[in-house]
Amino acid sequence: MNWKDKEIYLEIYPPHEFNFEECLLYLGRSKLEETHQIKEGFLYKLIKVDHSFILCRIGWGNCSLNVKFPISPPSIELRQKVAAYIWEWFDFDQELKGFYQLAAQDQVLQTLVHKYYGLRIVCIPDLFEALVWAIMGQQINLTFAYTLKKRFTEKYGESLNFEGDTFWLFPTFEKIASLHIDDLRELQFTQRKAEYIIDIAKAMVNGDLNKVRLLQGKKDFQQIRKSLMKIRGIGPWTADYVLMRCLHYADAFPIADVGLHNALKKQLGLEKKPSIEEIEAFAGHWKGWKAYATFYLWRSLYDEDL
Image 1 (cartoon, rainbow, N blue to C red):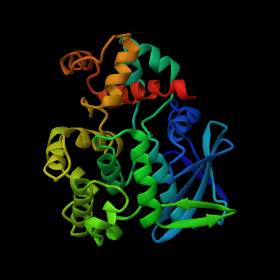
Image 2 (spheres, helix red, strand yellow; image 1 turned 90 degrees about the vertical axis):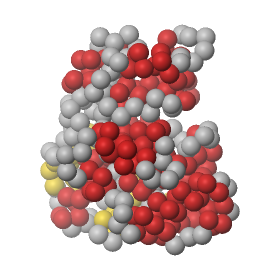
Image 3 (spheres, rainbow, N blue to C red; image 1 turned 30 degrees about the vertical axis):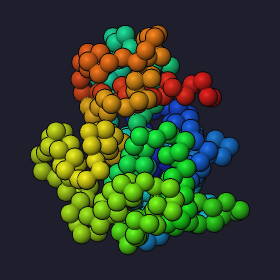
Image 4 (cartoon, helix red, strand yellow; image 1 turned 60 degrees about the vertical axis):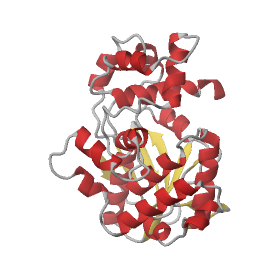
């Protein structure tokens, strides 16, 4: 990690292939989002580190992310953890030169990587949040998924008020493990989704499921995928989504994703969505980078809304 700790703020120096504005566009794609805010070109994020609430204001300048603390500067130890969180959030450990070299020769991706150069997968570092968000999004449109997330966060998340704004933390698995199915049903979760989410929270409380355990040892991509799919409520799409956005597997590929299908249809000028076999044929050229190919294709979908 490349960062400097100044007296009152952090400077985080990302890899060359990074475009803060592109990542902001992704983060700002829904007005219903509660776990971060974008105001006047700055990204506000509330992070809880070692029981401390830390409000960050993240901006861009002099080829670095400038992280300031509007309420009060945390200790140097906490600042180091904030820097590590942001580093993971923007997937800065991923070296993208190989992806850009591959994409430059690919009929589907070459235009997208030129247009969105510097876009990185915006990750979800917390495993519980990643799993719950993926389950929320199963078989519903994105707007309703964000509606569920907003209700869930405001009902069970912690918050901090500052200068007239409320900043929210995604609910913890400890909090959700104590709920009953009917508590989530009241927020319009289906019976099954409510069961899945509470069961996952309980598994994390018991220590049966955690990010470190999933990643420990020399497990390959498929082993971790199979481990995730043993959990009730996690099918292939959910497992691949979590591998992509939380566990940093650049070859994870949610092939059944509707957004991916729509983006390919749009990019290729097709009259109907491509079949799974056709998608597999395209993806055969993306080996090692299927997650990034997917993320760039997703990005192409909301151009019309900007």
